Image (cartoon, rainbow, N blue to C red):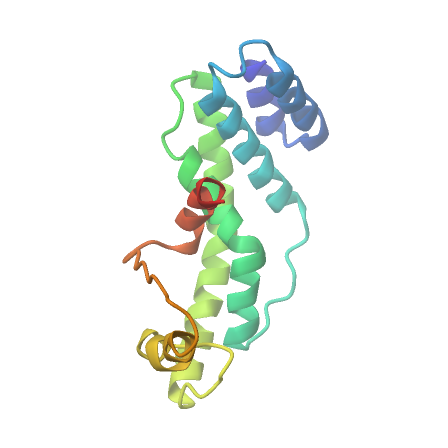
Length: 171
């Protein structure tokens, strides 16, 4: 199963790879090999990302931040789960090629985001849809404290892509 998945990922044929992933999930040994199944899921997610047409990049920071929340944070999560993730030689080569292609596409988005952030900052950073960290307490937390008890947990350095991994355990 994993060798076939590697072959399909290398060739770029997504649908057969997705069908192999479904067979891996249904395999009797899938619970014991859940990490490998998760990595295969992430590889298929990245392959789908590469096959989808890249949406036009909006110059506004708010649009790019929303795109990251809705789409690109999942891509970054998948990238982090695949980096150096397997000892299977065929899969390692396929994952490495996939990660290289995804990185190339992500770097374009990253540069555009950096340009939008610079423009936003130079323009006075006045958009109320985005908050800088210093504004969180007076704008968000203080009004809540007037009516509710609040526990604030700060995950310093935790990006949204990493937080995606934690979400299921918080429910």
